[in-house]
Length: 103
Image 1: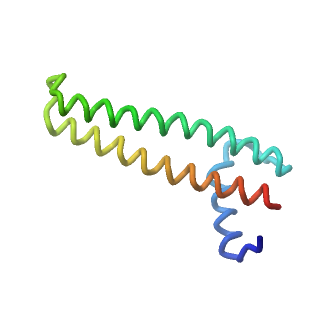
Image 2: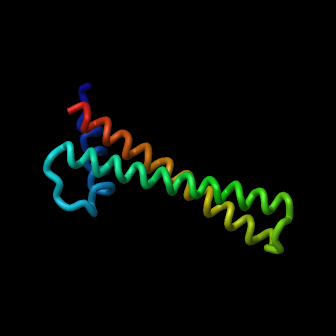
């Protein structure tokens, strides 16, 4: 697949963000392995945040605890935003893995 210069710059920025803590990996295989590990960790975070949203929604609907409505709304907003951001990060990581595997 032919990539445009915009795509290459986008992938370079993804690499800068998602591989910054792994040192200076030279081989594409090492980069893909590090990205797959990071993708798996993001999957766990995604699942945790989904479960938190479900738990707080269930708690709010059934009135299990004595938290105020404002606290529930704040918690739901925070965890829902986290779900969205983690989804975007997972998508970026998957695009970067596909880019490296196509090379």
